[in-house]
Amino acid sequence: MRQSPSPSSDVKEPKEASLLGKPELFSSLGQYIFLLLLLFLLFLSSIFLKYQQYKELTQFSDFTTTVIVEKQYKKKNYTVLKLHHKNFSFYTSSREKLKPLEGSKIELRILHTQKISFLDYLKGFYASTALVSNLYEKKRRYVLMDKLTSIHTEPSTSIFKALFFAGNIPKDTRKTLSSLGINHLLAISGFHLAVLSFILFFLLKLIYKPIAQKFCPYRNSHKDITIIVFILLFSYLFFLDFVPSLLRAFAMSIFGYILYDRGLKILSFSSLFLVVSFLIALWPKLLFALGFWFSVAGVFYIFLFMHYMQSLRVWQIFILLHIWVYVAMLPLVHYFFGLFSVHQLFSPILTMLFILFYPIELFLHAVGEGTDLDFILEYLLTLKLHSIELFTDFWVMLLYIVLSIFAVFKKICFKVLFIFNFSFLGYLLYGVT
Image 1 (cartoon, rainbow, N blue to C red):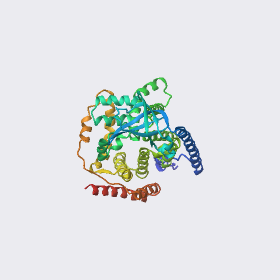
Image 2 (image 1 turned 90 degrees about the horizontal axis):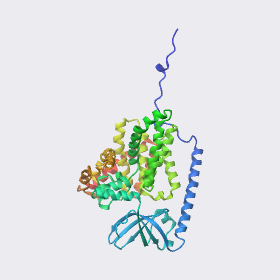
Image 3 (image 1 turned 180 degrees about the vertical axis):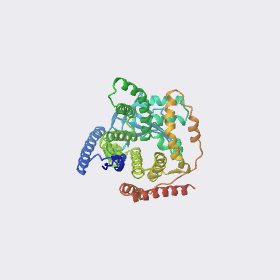
Image 4 (image 1 turned 120 degrees about the vertical axis):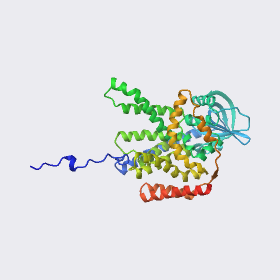
């Protein structure tokens, strides 16, 4: 009697679905449109709430309140202050000789508030002010920044303030970082969140898993640890006053985990669009946060790369993805910031090395040896770098954005985008030489 073929002989097992090949969140266009309508209603509600806060500010010609000094820096013969109120942020200036106020809580009077438009209120406005009193209080993260000042010397101090607590970097130091193409490493975003998530998950697994196996082996320890990690990351986000780029990354992480937990597609352009829409609906001021949009663009180009290159080996993806994101962001970055140096070509390499540098620095600061690697920063920041300024034309940037969107649907557009990016890099190199 002829035996029937075994399942393993003729029937091929389907390959495991990739992150881009799993089912979508919505099964129909109607569901998608319904959610967008809900988000639009949420956006209108947020705008209405903001408008009520705006009317409270502009009800009288002067408005006395308590604010936090977020930034303080010299400009010509006066001092600029960026101030944060629980409902809004704004700038003011003073020609008086001010002592360091960054992180301090002060009481002041905002003058001529009726000149402030609602759009300026959302974007962040400039206003004349009169100091009422210094309350001599500092937020906790600024107290910790002061401790870094006692450990490091400049410019290392500013680097670690930005790296750990979203502090400000002086103009000269930022120019050097831009010339090296590593400005993005100091702006806390999804890159840092991913490294922190990995560190926290690894440490918690060492502690939690043995306990769970002994006392509650029936629980899914990976899910429990993930929830604890998200709680810790949210605490960090709250501690940093919801930095826009980090807020986007955190929301994307939560959303991505929900999709993963339900076996749905993670690396989805529609998922990115929904997360961005949700954040803007909840915080309309993000529409005017440049750091937030750079963060979104970075994730978009990561997704675009994975959309067409996911068949590559892991080590190939790791290397090529860093190069791709660097060149893909150039046309956008150079519309706002024109500085370019040939040393920026090392940006992908320095970004990959940063994956080791960041956790090592966290560990060294935790054990009281935070200055051990300062010589690396001092070397990089004292390099004599030749740089130029070249800006992207508005119509070129607009064409680039349109081409990027079409690249989601057509591979030929992705190839054109690839050629465009390296041609733009060649244009910058020609300019600097």
